[in-house]
Length: 402
Image 1 (tube, helix red, strand yellow):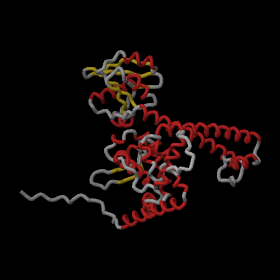
Image 2 (image 1 turned 135 degrees about the vertical axis):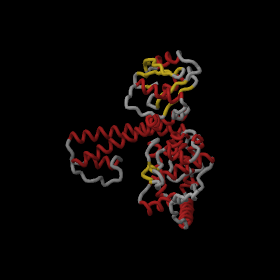
Image 3 (image 1 turned 90 degrees about the horizontal axis):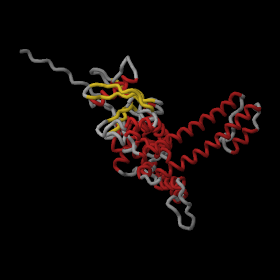
Image 4 (image 1 turned 180 degrees about the vertical axis):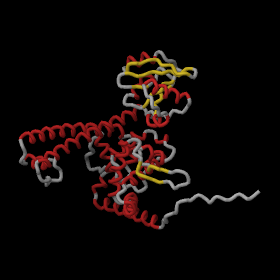
């Protein structure tokens, strides 16, 4: 099936031949009517699009299997100068018949719901950022100096903003933007609460929270994007899945040339890892030592720290273990904040909770000192490493004369 927004082009593979079967409306009733014409031995192949999961849910009860193909790999395998809907559908059928179809992993219902929540939150955050940029653009256009307060959109920042010499239409536009920001803030709080409720009891999320620089938003987004960690045989495959692997070019006997990261994969998960990498680079610990070592050699290459975080996440999730250099008080504080965000009741009384240790300055300073020791131990460990020369091909031996 070559699916579009309103219709899908159908091609059957029967006895080694392709048979066009016309179009089907992309509605639930149209897909169900098409599904009744199929049997339990049939397989349906579609490409990954915005409505492909809906096709999977509707047609799965009627057929043996619904397969989602990777559109990038299909395009690389079956590039054609003549391209029509029938040809595209025939390519999918032919690749499946030859057992050469690159498939996409299908998430379960819970993982799919988490992905939708994370995507909606990302859209709200991007919308808020766009509105804030519009307010800054208005101030910049009228030569208004920077706000003296830390947050332009906070209480003191808004009071300062109301007294700026701006035209009436610009003031009205700023008021509309501020009202929109308040509404989006309420939506963001609701989405954060839904995400916290969905992942509060997930051990994978709690395990990722033990990493320095990883908060609830990053942990929930990564777990939703990864799904089943066991589908990745090695950490390098997870790194490639989020597009943090370097591009490689090699030809003949020449040395491999490594370029920038590929940026092919789940872009939002990659952005979350980069965000966590910046936070981890500022906190004391082995990850900061790694960042400083890379920065001394190649500059601010935070993508290397993000890649290290992806590898670390793979090991923690596959081995069911917490981060070795976790700060217990900080982890308890993040865990309790997740529970409160999910709607857990406040604990009042004389009995102290698990997150109380984070409020004690001496305990926080002790954990920071332990993290700094781990950072120094990493620096001493890698200081003895020596760069290795690239491997070269052995010289060719001449054959003895006959």
